[in-house]
Length: 106
Image (cartoon, rainbow, N blue to C red; front, side, top):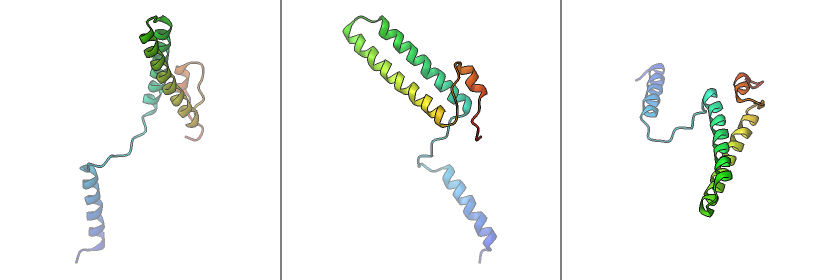
């Protein structure tokens, strides 16, 4: 008969091994804070580029493309801003100041 302690440790080890080699989808990891700030900054830049492209195209097909790119970039940027707000960040005028701020409940 296997002792309860040994059995408990064997089960924990087995779970760790099977989880390591499992083919199941793992839960998405929350991006690190610095990565999140970089995502916000990149989304802002993408929106500015799309807006600039929209302002400089004249071909009707390119206008449609520029509109789609601008709308997509705007939605991405808006989503990230809402996420930052819901996570407790209050966005200052400059993105560098955002890096210095932390949520109150952290």
